[in-house]
Image 1 (tube, rainbow, N blue to C red):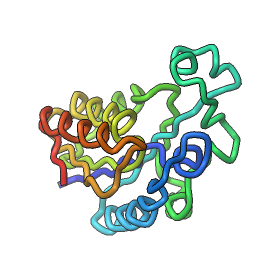
Image 2: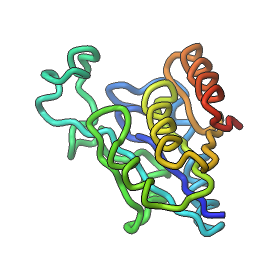
Image 3: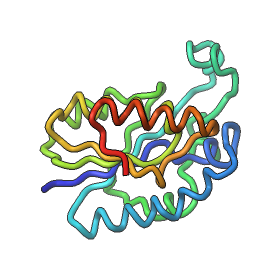
Image 4: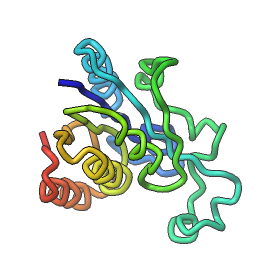
Length: 173
């Protein structure tokens, strides 16, 4: 059984910066612990990082969400807290300028993971998008989301996202 943990966008701007929200910081210790557990079980850890440039306001996302965030190279773009400290130099990192990472999905298609867990932010946007892409890339892998390791600023939307993911056969713990 080959395992993968995908840490989705646990970046300063989503925790304590431009798009931060109360409670996001509480995920950090659990995600760092899950990273260590995954590695101890012989699994791999990869990251997605929301990454924008100075032209963010001119993008489709920037027009619908006019809050500059995760600008490459800024403090807000960097990984947060203990999760940042637990990242290893050999961990693969997928920068993405939209919610889901096609580069991650393309890479997953070349892998043989049987279990893929996602953790991070935001549950109803980037976690949901990347879980769907992982399911499409490796349809026979079990896709897992521990509800204690993801969150969003809107609790109702968070709950709805987890329900939608259950509906597409993602295991919600």
